[in-house]
Length: 262
Image (cartoon, rainbow, N blue to C red; front, side, top):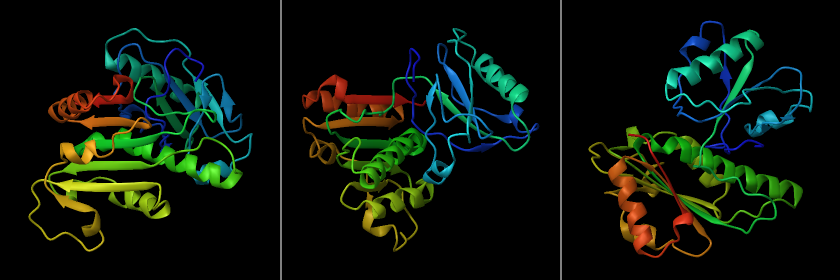
């Protein structure tokens, strides 16, 4: 993005907006962030805000299939509602019924390598709903694998290992999405699902990937290398614990990214 802050999660969820649903839009916004919106109406795939990252099916759209609406200034307000209301107002003015809107938010928790960058491995550590931004990064790594396989060029993505913990398997969000990516790229993407208070029987589909108990320091330490970046999102005690353990294991601070949601 040609703005002072990059996109946070590198995921562009499709949202079908209606005049009624615009007012219900909620998101986690912070003071000093920039908001951009992209709409699936005639226009361009690229604008000054950058390229919208969409699921593979959306890539079949022609170069005239997307139009961007950009809030080009950085808002200084600390009131979250100011950011939400301004975004909603732009969408309300510019969009028509059933337009598809994509929102990107500025921040520092992202993975967006350029084709010439050195290959990196990723370790993603998620707790509870902290899976949300990490799933976006996981999907982006899959897109990078597909792009390189299709074109024979582009960024050379290393391996990605997701560690994801919740109380039980019913609270493991996006299970199917995660396993689909693991099965699509078995040599590149792996996951370890942890449950801490499981009482029901674990399904046959999930059982090979599930460990009862918390994510351990040793599991994470086994993946430390000079080529590996660590992304952590979960409750503050969990985030603090793993980021501190990684620092104590001499992982450079610039290789440790974390986001606290509580």
